[in-house]
Amino acid sequence: MAKKFNFTVKVYYEDTDAGGVVYYANYLKFLERARSEAIYTLGFSNSSLLETYGVLLIVKSCNIEYKKPAKFEDSLKIISEIKSFTKTSFIMKQIISRDHEIISDADIHLVSVDKNGKPSKLPEDLKKKLED
Image (cartoon, rainbow, N blue to C red; front, side, top):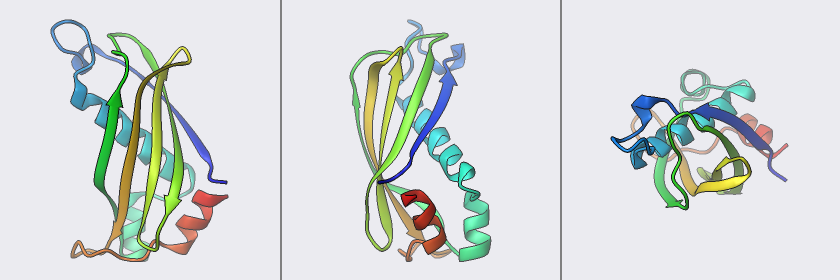
């Protein structure tokens, strides 16, 4: 079973539109921060993956459903979990919630690529830590 990663983000004024509601594209920024922190907690970073293994993790596709609006000064919890793996990619389920109420639900397809942008095998060390 894959690990679950937790990340909390506070909504600042800069994250919102004129009505105090989080602008839709900013959810993607929140999800990116949560994914980056998940990788950091395992002892990796994009720069270390490139330096050590010659790969980067990039987003191939994103499917996000907005269920409720997040607002200025909300504290949002993001849970990230691996749904599936292939040799070169994985799908991460990410759920943003506020007070146990789901705000958005996303499936992010991440691919390991080499410095030329070609798909490359996921580093075994990373895959193992994601699966533990």
